Length: 339
Image 1 (cartoon, rainbow, N blue to C red):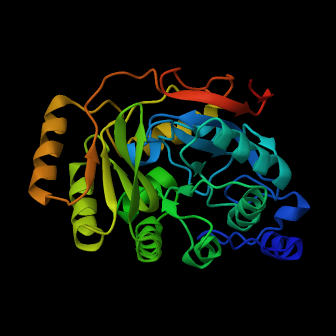
Image 2: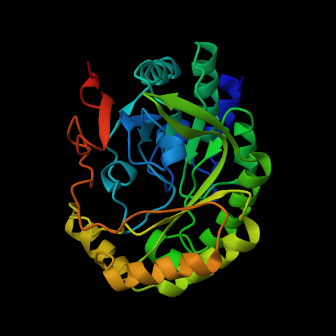
């Protein structure tokens, strides 16, 4: 297990993520991620909106962490990733959240936006496993991960669910404040694929059998309205480097978010979003994406039906941040465990 001394060293001059801010997070300072050395959680729930091999029958045991090492202008989870909503938890409390999710029927433990707390999460996952957690753990990240730090998760995390946002440094600089995102994400994805070959098991429930992912990588790419060329470039790279080795998830759910915040924050966000068309995906784009999927002919790929529903957008001030059909809350930063 990672020792407390190692945690102190790794947080005292933070180099955990590709930004390498170098701040002393144990002194209460925060880097670009806006978080100090405390690990904060906003919500834990059974989530039914992930890809089928992750959701399976009973939902993914999703733990939404506070803070983020990217600053995506379109982030649907901005309240927790950029505005700090959440509560600090100890490794014992984290382990208890994991075990409650397992007891509630979760298919896995799914850590959302974890890249700024890799050493502490490695220690906390070990604690949960020591206390009896048997579920596979899923790393649900932006893809902006340091390979050096990912090594700490080898053997602890077996499922990786990274984004692959863009191969354009210009676009990633404007939308995510990370000009180096493309090269950094490529290195991280290649490491994830190499260390986690796909492994499935069949799970039957009420006469229905589904495939459950025990190990492997699902790479998500969100189509950005008006930026069709970005998706072509990303899928071309994935065809060459990930086909038959990982699952591809092409998403068409881009949704304008009704952001709240200071005047300066909203102004910066509006300026960043000018790089894309901040609207729902239209039917023409949906058909173009379907044609492109057919042309690329990936071995394993998920694509969702087009929808104009925006009810799925979360509000983390609420005990149930999602629609009832999308999630069942187990723990909330304001309320604690929910019976």
